[in-house]
Image (cartoon, rainbow, N blue to C red):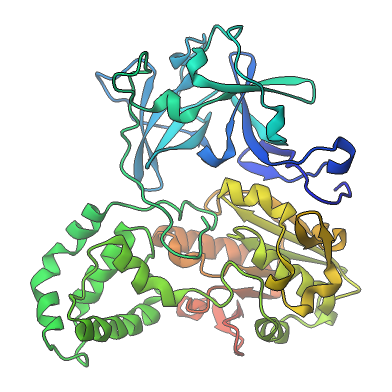
Length: 484
């Protein structure tokens, strides 16, 4: 990776679902990189959309045709349990295409108001970082796209990008001139409901509707009221726990499985007592209820740099240096904005100063993973443990090149095939419990296949891998496991 100071752009190539981070020297260009866009091709021309509007990169396969819809509506698509509409932008703009298929079509998942929408394009290119001053007003020369759908044009590295206004293209415009005639009527999506705001490599940022949760828990309404009226907290009703688990799954906040069953049972007992004291019913009726229930589940220092106490605990369970080769490979799926990854990189650098270290860090939150390579933070937010590895720039502190070179941030869904080699360590804190049960089983199997003999995995603080065959706890304050 190229050396730099200050801000930098993401010149990440998006290929087969991955974003490989690269950096450019801002000082040479004399521009501040304050705008990122996802670029793609459409009918032989280069287009882009604001990265803030893009949820993830997608390969659409097998979506379902819906009759009596606009010609550019390709159908609906099951995005990890949520049904979304799929629009072919080529057909909407009248761009000729050779043949329509339903297999591995390139596209984006975009946010339009409170909805998600699939958009089919010719191919997705990369994430480009620019200065917002480079965005020029739209021009009528782009006659193949209605100018009202263009928010500007950008020239970058000898390529001219047409910057599209996603909201204007897909919004219903009532009484305001010409409109696309299409409203993004996908199921409603609410925002990420707790401080651990990351997709953790699988769509965990998607949330269901309150109505779904109510339907899932409705049958328990009368028993729940009886509970809050003074029912015994010592006699745990299995049906009540099941209804709570169903509501958590409906909100896509938490998924019950063998690895978190004990925590769910303990938490339900606490929750029932809390709700009884507050005069409220036990069952989860709103997303806020689900968030409150799950909040104690997450591991220490979520979305923050690890504190020295936690770093010391992790250091105690690291493999002995003598058992490791010259290169230590580590996998960190669900890395989010990179706080956890950088903490791990500094710890490993201090613990194994004579070893080559490589960390594969991945997530499907496109915005987080594209900014993680250039994370900037105030000095007050980081413990003294890190002081030898940080440098000060124009906009705050960041990690030096020694640490940055250890990490490969990539856009990747943990449920898809990956290219990570055998690793000595996996850090996947709280990842498994926000995957559906079948996903939990698949990922644990992948972990077993990737982890070297004697390797260590650190799941979430309340995820018990030894509830599954093939794993044993290695003890200590950190919840860590090794293959049995």
